[in-house]
Each structure stands twice: as C-alpha cells, then as structure tokens.
Figure 1 (cartoon, one colour):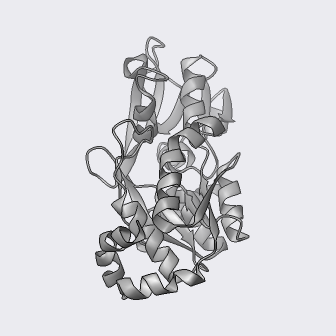
Figure 2 (cartoon, rainbow, N blue to C red):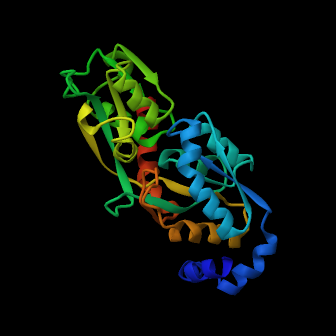
Length: 287
C-alpha cells in the first residue's frame, strides 16, 4: 500500500524538494499514531460517520494509527494543535489564521466543491414562507451565528453587517451562537431562530437528508471564500507532513460520501491571506 502511495505523491514531494526514497526512509521518525481533529460542523456522531472513511484511508496509506478527535467548538481544535494534542485537522479558514497566530501550523490542502472550485460561499438563510427575504426584513428577529471562530458562520457576516452599518446586538431581538453549521440550519428549520449565517457547502450536504433546499430563502451570498484547509503541526517530521498532504490530494471520494466537499487541492499558508485581511478588518470593527 505505501509503495503505491509514494507513486501518487511523487509530484508533491518533488515540489517540496524531497525524493520518494527519502520520504520512505524517514518513516522511522514518524510517531506510531497521530490525532486528526475536525471542527464541529455537525454533531459528534455525524462527524464520526462522515470522516470515518478518510480516517481509515489515512491509516492504511500512512501505516500509522489515526485517532479522530472532535471538539465542542473551533477553539478546541486550535488549542489542541497548540499543545500538541492534535497533529492534523480540518479547520476553518478563520480558525486556521487564528491558529497560525498562536502556534506553528501549516496548511497542506484545501477542500474543493462539487464544481471543482477550491472554496465556498457564505450565505444568509431564512425559512420559506416567513416573509423574510432581505436584510431589512430580519431586523428585530432572532439571529444565529455558528461559532466565534467560524469564517462563514461569523466572520464574513460580521464584515457584511459592518459595511451595512448594522450592529447585530441592536439590530436583532436576540443573537445566539448555535455551535455549528448543521445546528444552525436545524434551528432555523424548527423555528427556534429566524435567520442564520451558513455556507453553501455545509448547507448543500444536508439537502435531501436533513432538510430540503426549497424550505429556505437565500437572503445573501458572499464572494468566494478559500476552501477549508487541512492543517498540520509544524513540529511533525517533514516527511510525515508531505505524506499527509499527498494522502489528501490523492484521496478519491466514494459516491456515497457524506462529506460536503468533493476533493482536495494544494494549499499553502498564503492561500489564506484574504482571510487574514477579513480578520484584521473585524479587529478594527471591534475597536
């Protein structure tokens, strides 16, 4: 298995200045097991089911034990990587930028949507039939962000609100944080909130399973956001980081995959400079 894998990542290793033979030789430096963390875009049981196939694939490909780690919020992933408890993670763009400010992490891959684009869009949703079709309509209603570290669930709509002169605490009757993208849509569907910020990847992944597209209005859609990255701890052996990168780039999604993305593309730290600009803009807003 590992030999065929090295053929798949030959281009990747060459770009990074490593040879396939040196990558193989350095495997003795690798830990016997690694921890892969995933931000809480859904409930724990759903995440385990969604990512189970990739975890198994990573174990077979890398020939090391891979333990899946879920946390209650995005900060848990950031903290886990900072303290060496999480070695690699599926972590949102904004959370990745925050992690780079606190510890040594590196982006090695980013998700690609079903149109082959390495990115996604933030969206604002309301329930169909609610009569809420514009930002003006949702004034005085109950609003839900996802997580403070979420890009599409908090950062992007916060920038939008600032540009529109909207202070969420004053504009809405109540503001909550749902904890995750799936939780937000389900809260909206159940009528517990009136409007939410989300993204098209996570929303589309639940269509026909947990909700229907026609049950909602898309009030607003953002420009393209860089795809959610796969990040690794900088302290890991270089050969292992390259192998993890190659594994994700080579992964072929099964037809019955429940993950929102359709593949992974190459990524590097500068891929998230546009997100850094949004983070800096948000800091200025907060001041």
